[in-house]
Length: 291
Image (cartoon, rainbow, N blue to C red; front, side, top):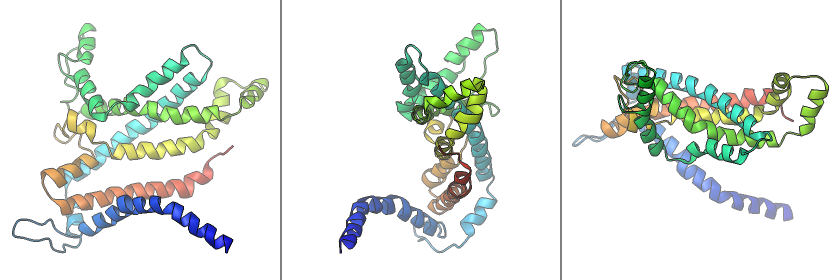
């Protein structure tokens, strides 16, 4: 009887979180999957079952493939650089140096700024002829360049903004992980004659792998849900050169009012993220070096 009471108590304690999870995560995902098989209702034409028509249209949609390629390039540019910069900053502010509290605050400040504010700040930096970046290039005698108006540079400019925004957030996790590692390991490595690089590569980085995998998943999710900066800075232009998947879903759903196709696009994004998370939990976690 006490065991039964404990089980009931445990389920009752979990019930609020389960209700929120089902209401705001699982049910919307299933509803999106359901709507992806139906056409978009129009005036005088109700929605009807369309089967795989939305997915067939996706295969033939050049803008979708452009957005997918842009998102892959955006993720490849932001994830490794953000993680590497976060580790470097965490190692720097974890040491015994004067003013490390101020440095931690300075590195973390971009994280707490609203995304719209960050986008407007960097929009000023990239403004042709008048922006801060233009002032620097003119002082160096370099020609003026429209960073957000050039198809060859717009995605790279957005990658810089994302790294600046996210690296400080990831640094906090690495800093917490570093503070949980015993200093005796560094002392033992020094007694064995290991250099700082050897200690980091052979001891420190393997112990940071659980944090790295956690940060990796968050960085991947952030790279897919990037929409605020694009909406303020580029609107997906020029010529869809900066259109990412979530922004394209927003365009299809709220600018073109094609809810059925937007639902199909959302399902594809959810499947990609789900497979990535499954790969992480089934394979990468087993290769992680835990302390």
